[in-house]
Image 1 (cartoon, rainbow, N blue to C red):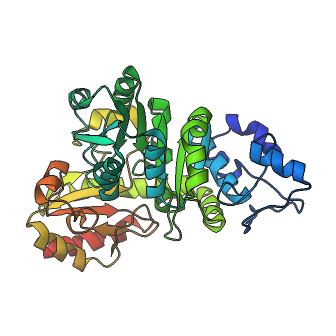
Image 2: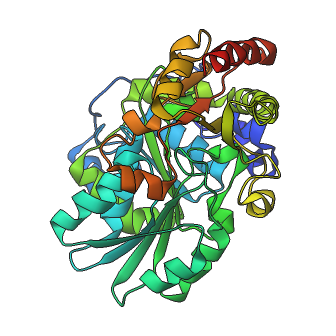
Image 3: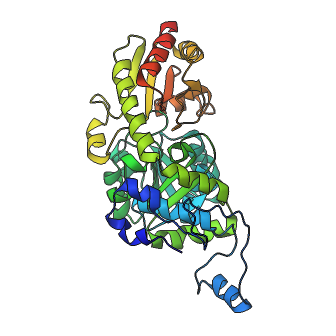
Amino acid sequence: MPAPIESLLPDLHEDTQLVHAGTLRSQFGETSEALFLTQGHIYENAEQCEARFLGEESGFIYARFSNPTVAMFEKRMAAFEGAGAARATATGMAAVTAALSGLLRAGDHVVAAQALFGSCRYVIEEHLPRFGVDSTLVNGTDLAAWQAAIRPNTKVFFLESPANPTLEVIDIEAVAKLAKSIGAKLVVDNVFATPLWQKPLALGADCVVYSATKHIDGQGRCLGGVILASNEFIQTHIHTFLRQTGPAMSPFNAWVLLKALETLPLRIRRQTRTASILADWLADQGQVRKLIYPGRADHPQAEIVRRQMGGPSTLIALELEGGKAAAFRFLNALKIFRISNNLGDAKSLAVHPATTTHQRFTPEARADMGIGDGLVRLSVGLEHPGDLRADLTRALATV
């Protein structure tokens, strides 16, 4: 039974949509979303079962295909993103892999920005070529590089913006226009911006992917991913692929993520505000050789940030004088920031990308991505800004 508020949702603010969108209530009229821990569903008769499988009657069939709790999460995310449809996956990398695999065939070519999360680079550089899909990596901030990489068989552009971990920002609208000019699709990983601060679909992207593990859950509890696009895109490229290959989201994880969405604006706005305070302070510290934060005027793509993002980020990148040794001393001295390769959490986290998320790359490849041995990525949480600054002050003293 859909909630009466559904008819009002298109005119409501995001904060309200994140509390109410997509809610399905059972005959018991529960306040909180119900958790449907079931693998399958019962049909009234064989004819109804046939109609469900033929797609002639809407309804649930099997948890690998769909589930009421997962469907609520998908509908709420679609409303938040401004997408026609969404499909949830077990992890963020399942979302990335499914989105690209659903679009590409043997003989196709994909162009991707070189500044990517390590696992995303693996999919582009190593996984897809196994199945006859060629790839080219380019400097994502250079539109001419995208143009030069195009081949007659180029079908997909892929990018992160801001990128992990260097917070490089790409002009999504410009890349989207270039993709459309050749009939290619643009897939954007929007994890670092969050759906609160950036809307790639409104900028011309065809598909947006998230690791829901990050800001969407934002409390370190579960894994999840989501693919968002027009309904036509989802039905044509994604729906059958997910149904047949099975990277399904757990109903329990979907329920956890639904509850997390209710507080996402509160968390992200607070974390972003604190990150901005800390970034401005860190930029003045002598031990910091380079500070990268999308909310600052000295960000290399500050003009693009102002144009395409509604807010900066909860992430900060800083290059410390002294390379890996200095970075390790800094990390080991932190008490409130905890060393973890996760991000977007309520707890502040710090990581050394060169030895973790991007450790499998050669020093030359990391240099091309802007990842030096002294680079540290900070994910700012919900702690008091004063406590976090004191923690960073202690750690910088070791550098």
